[in-house]
Length: 173
Image (cartoon, rainbow, N blue to C red; front, side, top):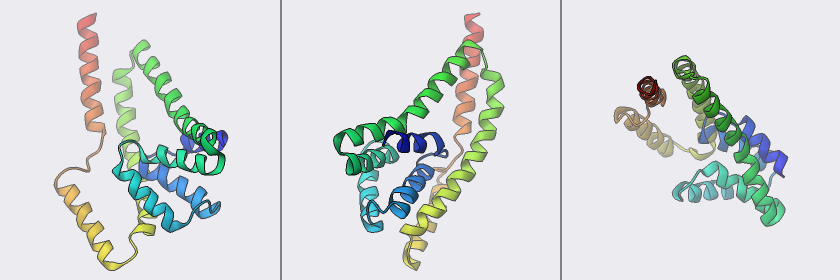
């Protein structure tokens, strides 16, 4: 159980949409641990609750297949790769003073992740947007989010934080 969900945590890049798509493909489409309809309802509930939906889905499927221990191991497996990666990168970032060098990398990665998220949304949306009215609602919501600037690349915020860290480090010197 731990290894299966460790794989999700290590390979599911691109945020929640990509993660949920990968979990759905393996646990629902391939393994048939639950029906498509049950998965949609479950995801709708998890989207209302606070916390990351992908992690909650992993805990649910882990518990479904392995009881409480399975749920714990699935959740731990899903979170561990991201924790190790962020812990390691943050230590390297601070110790090696890489703020200026990583800005371009983060900016480039945001474009790649944007493509992964778009692909995942199209794949996941295909199972939820099943008729013309739902397609129109989804398209209108997407257009409205763009117009209200709710869908903006995260790199801008990262660049601001990187510059602030650079300035703070220069003051400390």
